[in-house]
Length: 310
Image: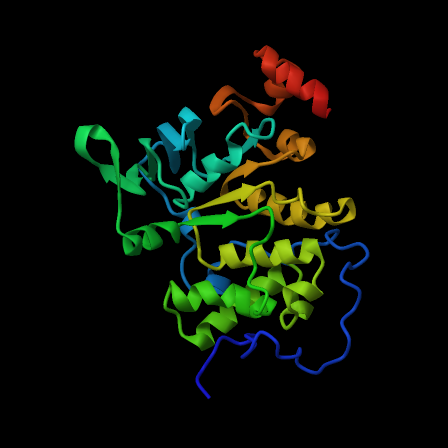
């Protein structure tokens, strides 16, 4: 039998490995004591923490006049902003305002039609083409650049045929080319840090939404990214499961991880973010401290949005 990632079913219809029936997916009180230890830990990652490295660039992540179209619809209309190392930017706005598209462009998952994205001052995702327009890069080069940017999706995006351990290991073995033994050690340690030491052998279908999202965060963190992007990470969760995910994100912020978070969690934006952005119709219309954004917004569109969500 050929080697495979631990936790990978050899056939999609193969029954789950025999073991005691799992506990109910939701652990009462989950999140109250999370995470379990430091998340940005060189001893877990087996290498220096990239998020802690110094850089001469003013911004660790920057969008410069970014434009994005889907057919005739311009979804991003000249978006410009930067994130300083260790800062948390919360992005709020109505549905359809371009928030998720912006994150996908920052994560190099979508090509842009105009402008540029920079990581630590270096252009990523594209090069200057004819007429100054962005020209795409080869997929292999994009894959290397993407490994510096962690992305956590609204719907978890876990592989259903892999266990929690297998989901966290796969990027280490397939992208970072770590040995299976080292990848297992890193993945097990990180799952322990997000409070899932007892769930490493469980498949996504056996985990609660909050547990699945913590697996997704662990999967991103083991790649040792320089910045983390979160696309409404709690919006698909039952209300009682939101706290366990926010606890991990709050700890990341305390440890100095640079983060851009698209969210409707107003409390998180107010308490954790360094700056809050308001997006509307593909543009950033407000960029302020949490105090000013929530207590004295300058734009009427922002005031109207806040009246609807507060």
